[in-house]
Length: 456
Image (tube, rainbow, N blue to C red; front, side):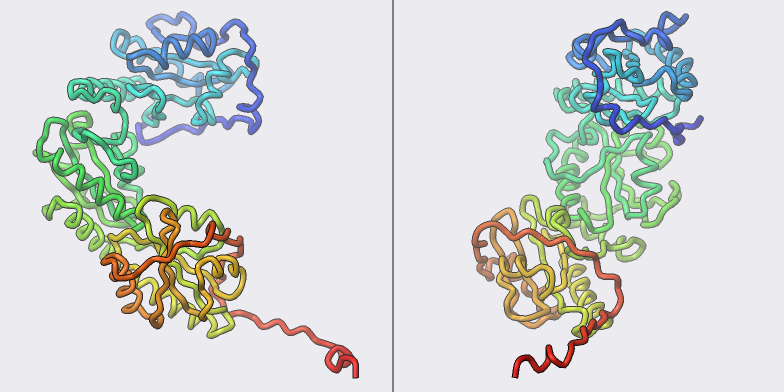
C-alpha cells in the first residue's frame, strides 16, 4: 500500500472509551506481539508502565494501538515487527492492545482521544504531551523512513538547543512560534492533504535550521499567516534537511525557497511557481491575496445564526468584528439583500490583511437583544465594529456603502473613531435558521368581523 493511502479502520463503539476498566490483569498484547523472530516491539503491563517507559522517556517512540480482532491490525503486524527489528537501537516501537476493554492496556488508550479506530499509530517525540498521528504507508519501508526522518529532526532540534519544541509547529529554524500563528508544519505525510488537495491558495517556504535568511523570514511568515486567516489561503513550511524528497520534488537548491500554489483541488508539483517578491509580512500578504483574487475562492461572509459563529469569528486578540444588520427580507426581497451583501463583501475585500472579520444578520427580527447591546436602534442597514476582547464597539453613522464602510474602518485604525464600552456582557446570539436565498413570504392571518370591530 502506498504512503498516500490509509486503510480503513474499525470504528470504536461510541461508549467504549467511557467504560474502560482500570483493573490490572495480565497483559494481552502477547497475542500479536509476543516474541516473534526479528521483532523488537515492546508491550506494556499497565498504564503506569506505559508512562514510565514512553511518556517520561527521552527517546523517540512509535506506538501502535490495536485490537486482536481487527483484521487490518493483523495485516499490519508483520510489517510493524519487521520495522521494529530494523530500527532497534535507534527508535523504540511499542504495541498497546486497546481492544480488550477489560484489560489494563485499554486505560492507556483512554488518555489519547486520537485513538478512534484500529490500528492507530502515534509518534511520541521530544514533547510527549503532544504525540503526532502517523498517517504514512503501512509497510516496513515507509515506517522506517518516516521514523528516521523524525529522529533526524529531533537530533537537529537538540543541536539548536530547542529540543523541547521538536515536533512543534516551527518548520526548522524558528526560535519561537507565536501562539496565534496559522503556519502549518508540512511533512511527507501531510503535504498532499494540506497543499495539493486543498482548494485554497498556498504558500510554502522550504527552510533549513542553520539558514540565517530563513530565520529572518519565519517571523514575517508567522505574522502574515494571522492576517491571511480566513482569507482563502494557507501558509506552510518544510524543513528541507529532514524532508529531502519533498525538496527534490520541488527543485529546491537554496534556502529559503518559497513556492506559491494556485487555488483548486488535485494540484501537482508542476502547478507550483517560485515566489520572488518581498519576504516581509506585507509583501507576503499582498502576493497571496493577489493569487486568491486570480485563482482562489475568497471566504464568503458568514451569516450570524448562532453564538458559535460569533465566538469563532470575534474571539481572539486584536480582532475586530464588522457586523452588518441588514433589513428584513420583506423589505426589498432577495435582490436588495444580495446587493447589500455585495456592498459588505467589497468592503471586506478592500480591508483584507487587517484584523477584521465580517458577519451579517437580519435586523429587527430574532437578534433584538444583540441589537440592544450594540445600540443598533436607528434603522437598517447598519454597521457596527465590535472589539469583543476589549468589550467595546463603534457604530458607523454614515450611509451604507462600500466607500463609507472602508472609511469607517480606516478611521478606527487611525484612532479617529472613539469606541464605546459595552454595558455589561454582550447579549447571546439567538440561534436561527440561515437565510435560504429566497424572497420572503407574507403570512396574513384572517380575522373575524367581531375581532376587527371589537366591542361597540
